[in-house]
Every structure is written in C-alpha cells, then in structure tokens.
Length: 235
Ligand SMILES: [Zn+2]
Image (cartoon, rainbow, N blue to C red; front, side, top):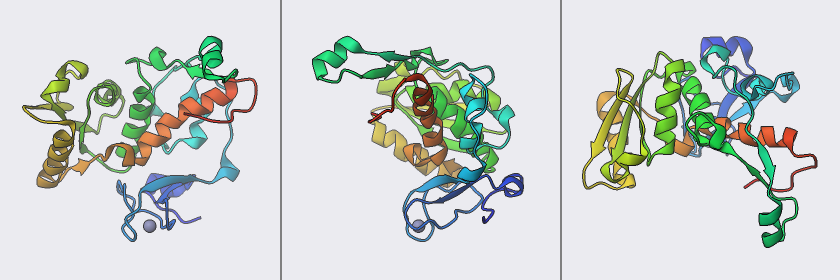
C-alpha cells in the first residue's frame, strides 16, 4: 500500500486520500480535486485492518473507518443518536420499515456536527492551519462548536447577511466571521474562495472536502447497528 499522507499517516497507512475516478493518490496536503483528471477525491481504507470496536461512542466504535489518526482530535463521550421506526409516516408513504435518524440530539442540533468533527480533524492532520468556508447556518455553527478540539485551526467564515440569524458562531481568535451585504449563498462561497487565494489559505470546498463526507457517514454506520434488519436504501 502506498503511503499518501503526512508522516504520522505514512507510518500507519490505514487510509489514503485518492481520486474517485482514476484512483491516483492525492498529495499529503489537503486535496479536494485530483491533480491529474480533476475529479473529486475520496478516502480509501485498508479494509483488512478495519475492526468495529466495542464502544457505544461512534467516534471510537468506527474509528478504523475515519480518516483521522489522533483520536484526541475527535469528540469525547459521544452517544449514538436514536433511529426511530416512523410507522405512521411509513404507512402514508407505503414504506412499512421507514426509519428516521433523529440528529437533533447532536450538540448543535443537526447532523452537521458529525461532519464538522471529522472534517476539522482531517484538515488539521492534512497540515491545514487557516481555512475559508461559507454556509447558510448549520455547517458553520457546527464548525464553530467543534473547532475547540482542533487547536491548530483558524476558520474564516463567510455568510450572506440574509442568513445571519441562522449562524451561531461566536467570534474568537479561531473564528473570523465576515457578513456580506446584498450577497447570496453563491456570492459568499465565491468570497471565501477569493479570500483563501489572496491570503494563502485553504478553501475548504464544502461537500468536496472528503473529511466532511466521512463524518456524515457515521449516521449511516450507527443505523446499521440500530435497525434490526438489512437496510435497503439510505436517503
Ligand atoms: Zn484523477
């Protein structure tokens, strides 16, 4: 297996960031798009080394399936959120085994807490120190909450003013918040990318940040434990 990441990762080689299309190994630094073909990158694991641990805490139970080596960067003492059998709604929809994952139990009340916890740890271990991002609320609120655990990171957050009431990000030395007047979500994303380029920072890339998707995955992994029969579809 080719080591494809920072020195701490190279020693472990438990996972690699690779191109989703051509499978080329990405550079050790944060890389959202393949330098050869331009496709998005993804995390590939050595599944022969994956073990599901004896723990209720999803960050410990599934740690072999997370792209983070230093477990101290991840949340502590986290419990799985409930998966509820939505029998009445399922009757209406003709789906008798419909289940809902209740992510309101996460620290800031949305599934973006999982995304933020893993994405920030991943960014820090990729050597990122300052990153620029934009959001309409949930993601940046979750980032601002989770950044306490990744002391090397500073977030430069760009929000269109129309979404200001949905973003709960207390400004600090680690969270620099820009509110943009007369701007749309797309304008805010562009401003974040421009600021990153002008100041030598990393543009975090939203969904194209592989660490984000790896964090969200925890909800599905938990559901496999919680639903008593095989799951046909995840939405
Ligand atoms: Zn490629």
